Length: 273
Image 1: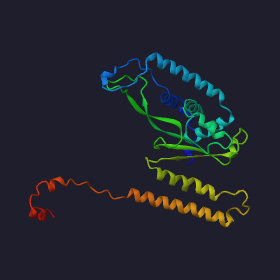
Image 2 (image 1 turned 45 degrees about the vertical axis):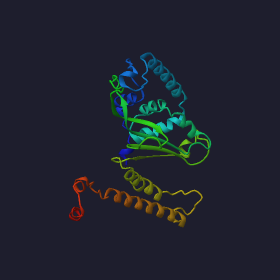
Image 3 (image 1 turned 90 degrees about the horizontal axis):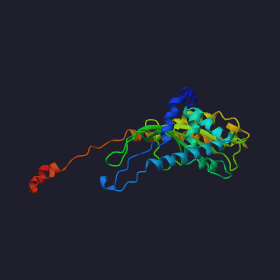
Image 4 (image 1 turned 60 degrees about the vertical axis):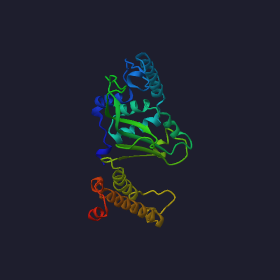
């Protein structure tokens, strides 16, 4: 887990190109008439795309100017947890169309969670040219983006921030009021990633916890012991469920047409049986 939280500052140039291509598009100068594809498709002109890119740049700089110590704290944790530079994380965040969720997370009684996915997404190539069917060349690239967790498939790394109270999140309390964690969807297996996160990170952290707030007895308290036992039991159930799913029996599909197509009379049915 240590390597998971080690920052890789040396890949700034590569990563910046990677993230930059994930949030900026290339202008399309060709527009195909609807009759070419037989269906309606809207393709923006080069001038329109340039204007949109200009507006996007202005928006990004406005957001960059809004970054305070709270956002810097999130950026630092994301950079450490995912293995990107802080510059890469900042660029991804200010380019995100869900940027406003960060302020909603900081607000009093705001969002209880703030999720980030870092995974392969289909991106348009920078030199994309329009095909005859109206589509463009695209490829998979790593991208960091804000998500509600309900619209995109989770296939890579999830970094999350959780609030511990309904207080407004300020620069002075963000490190106390906000918890951070990361877990991977290992080989596309969410259950395995969650199992690893709980068993290797959360449970050891809980069992080494000394301060349990109002519970003065700490780990000696029976309720705390029952809680830890329940978490252990849940991880065991999760592990069993994952193994059962992985070991499931796949029944081969049989084409019965070859058996029934020549059945003509009762004796044929008996023979087939």
